[in-house]
Length: 272
Image (cartoon, rainbow, N blue to C red):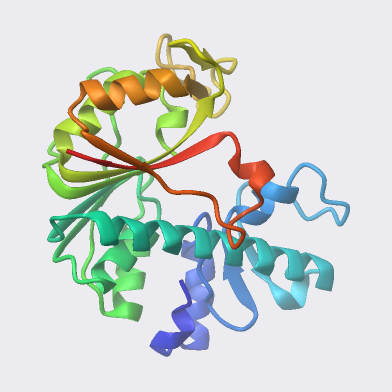
């Protein structure tokens, strides 16, 4: 999302660089955010630019090659996100409310608010309230943040209410109870669910787990497995059994992140 079109000031851009990180925002001609550079180059960056705690680049402080690759990677991430949102909006039959589970800074909600959704609510385990306040001030769009996480012990988010459209982007991959989470998403979805998650390319009904506690060192068994791959047959069965009658796969486009990156994920618009 390019915040320059809203007349962001240099002081606001500097504040944005402190608040935003994971999602792809353009703050100024010299400041951008987003994780795509790290996804594509974080393990092999010959320039030594790898800071997993922050995903912000100031053009004046990094080699030109880093800036070019960072801007290109996160530009592709923006195109990809916006392509998903366009497809969701074209297929959704109800377009009043949207809920984003694990919303981060609220990129998706800002875009849905731009498209006329009246109620745009995001939940996250990290406190992103300042990000939402900042973006609301810049864009003038109305979105709401709730500092609550999905609870894998109880398979729910306290107080979460059903919405016309539900977004679950890159969260199911990090949960130990992906099938329960799928049921929770179905319960929260009135019309359309968008699901972006990793998959295993096996023909059986299976879930493959990474070694425990990759990200959350304090999580206790059995909710300590924070990277998983659900087999495609099991994922599709789960969607069918939880009430989704139509599932449309958003097909990879060459404006997105590279196909080699995308091959182990599914991008699904699921409708009741």
